[in-house]
Image (tube, rainbow, N blue to C red; front, side, top):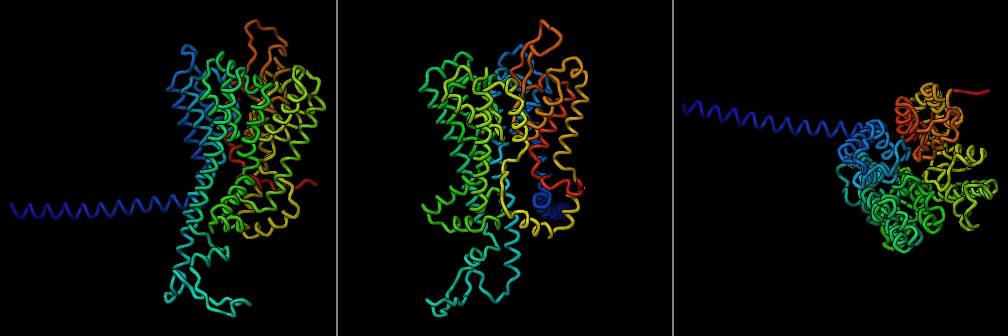
Length: 527
């Protein structure tokens, strides 16, 4: 009996040790596999991330009840809204005032975690793992007789007369720019986190203070039953994330005469996307002046070594700022010259017209908030907006940049070969437009003024650029009179078939990931 008990205990101990070692081995394998996927297939990580948060948001929106409990939202419309918020596209198939306050908070979270600044901050975590692996390899490659913590080097300098100076291993890495310390990545992550906090919290406070000081703006929200806090936070996060959603059906049209509010939102939009890189560089430079940390100096002097795409050289930042400002000026001049006496601006003062023109021009690049009915604007402006929506956030004129890129591309011929066979972004847009024209062909035949090729193209480009501009739907343009027809305050896509909406969901996701296809289609030559 005692012998059997001893054997049993020995077996249990053996099994426990084996199970423990197996668990540790499995955890290590999973961790290594995860790091390998993150470092070698970032597209897979991005697709998984946006799919998870979109379906999580969909589930939360379905569980929570809308404002009017008798108005049940369709599952596809709820999924469409969730994807639109998480990809910061602001394409809408239902009215925003249909959502309850709890659902608006869910959309706020989706816009926050789907925004470019937040997702780039998550990417820094994967960068740390990559650089941590490189650092450990570099340390192991050194001779065992060398002290890792300090290296004695001779600096030939007129002032030192060839004196031997002890330099830390970390400082040696920092000087030559070939290696990046994990602490530098940690510092960068904290800077981006602080930037995200300052822009969103600061924007929310500014909008909240304005609404409390201006009675007219307060009354608008009271009539609609929307709280000042939820409006302030929702609008600020939407603006910084360049989503374009607002809690009211009319978007910013209802506040088109509140010029100060529009001027408060404009910097938030620019800081969250098109000018994020220069603003981040300015923040790091300010921290360097205040704290004097060596990490700030390294980040400013070696932006490319870190591999964070939002870190640019001074030259690139200057050209980006000039490009952004130039495009805004061109749009504003064209808008004012063609729409100064139009119906959209006729009840405004000259000052309000100029502010609205600037606000509309800033939003055309990526944000998608609107102070006018886009369907009433002239065709020339709509064509210009289509071009602006197609341009990526960091579009800039940079002389001599192609030559620098060609050197980098030659290092990876296999990758270039794959990119050559991928379609260009223009090809994908053409395919999506054709597919939607097929799914909506019945409506295009019976309602050609609303359902025309240009309105569909405009909607697709807006979704692909994650902008959110839309013509909406007008019963007045319908050739067949319908007593039950109601003008839609949501997007034009809200009148599409379920197949058309499903395709536009793919377009929004595809557009959010378009940075992985910037060099596609190079095998095609037009001669």
